[in-house]
Image (tube, rainbow, N blue to C red; front, side, top):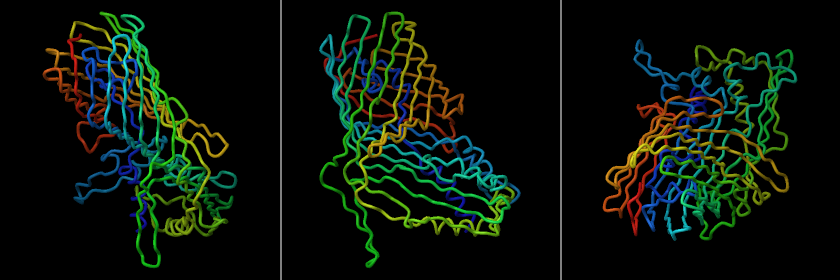
Length: 471
């Protein structure tokens, strides 16, 4: 039971992915897909006077763990084991598991010559799960050497955040001359679900003589949802109620972009999702510890040797786990303080050389700042909790004015950890210059799917009207 509990805790890293929805550099490097405008509002495909984007999907996965990081096969015993040491080593640098999903409901773009207008609606899901570094240290080292004032923090703001929201956007672009285009977009946000840490902590303190171990839990999380879940303890049933009205959790963000293009080259830059984010005011609840005094002290346990041969030894963990379970009781309080959460801000830079009329190559950079919680009540708590970047060498080929192939190799960084080779490829088909079908697969960290740590997939359809040939 002890090993199972520990394994489930660590394996959560593989089944709870995080959002933040990094876009594909391949899509940004496309010259034919109008949805490149979502990454830079100064982009607009020159071969179409009007486009209509039909429902499509974008998914982004970023995980520090892969199958080979978790499991190893013992051929002598013909069984697969969980490699706890490998898991702890992998999680030791503070990486988060991240999943971003965006569904493009509908989009419209109209080119008026000197300026263009874009309208779009999307539904987005952002999920994040991180292993607190104090917990990683505790599982790998125990409490040896951490006594007195050297407190081990087992729970911090890196634990979990989840967000579901809708986005309606109005964009405007202006051609200042034949080469330079600038653009801006305003995004109106509606929040449907948020689960974020508002100050939860779990600390463990060891007496200088190792005679006792004290755990202190302060559970404090914000929970806001358009779905109410209540439990009837008398009838032992769970009731789910979906609100029929739009939640009053509103926000606003902005995009800015510029693009300069000649017959020889093009350069571009944009900042996306810059602004305060979502203001959560409707249906707020707080998840807090059930007891005011949530401190527990137990004696006679030395957990310095809790790891034996890569597995947890129940002799050293049973009392500890049972005690922590007793601390985990919680209650839900209705009507918490209004608060803000920020959408990760993205920065894009690009440079492409036009080798021939249909062939281009260059470098693209995408950086993402995950700022975490912005404001609770009247107190601002702006904090950068993560930085992620993707730098891609990219080649683009346009064939017969209706086939575009884009290929890239990317270097990824996640909170300072580098991943050196992540290929990607995209195919865009526009038969008869009217219907467009596109698929992008980017940031593939491994061709063996179960060992993939990073992956971005986009697919969808667009319709064009008033098309004309272009570079």
